[in-house]
Length: 108
Image (cartoon, rainbow, N blue to C red):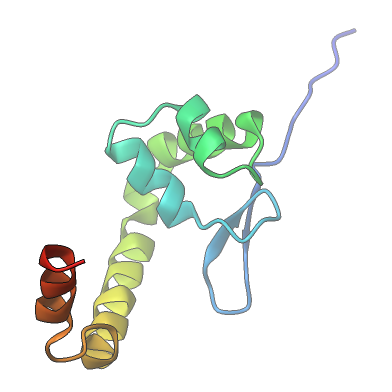
C-alpha cells in the first residue's frame, strides 16, 4: 500500500485579489520578477527572509507550470501598478528634487 503525499501550493489570495506567498505579505509578483531577473530560489529566499526556501521552490514550480493561466493576473497587476505610479508621479518626484540631490552630492 502506497501513501500519496499532496502538499498545497503556498499561495493565497488576499481581500484585494493579490496572491501572497506562504502566509506572508510577499506577493507572487515579487517572486516571479526576481526569478525572471535570474535569481535562484535560494537568493529569493535570502532577499525575503519571511519566505521559506521550500515555499519559493513550490511557487516557482507552480508559476512555470501555470504561467499561461496566470498571464491575465500579471497583466492586471501591471495595469494597477502603472495606474498607481501615474496617480502619484508628482508625489514621488517633487519638482527640483533631482537637481537638489545632485547639488548636495557636489557640495557636501
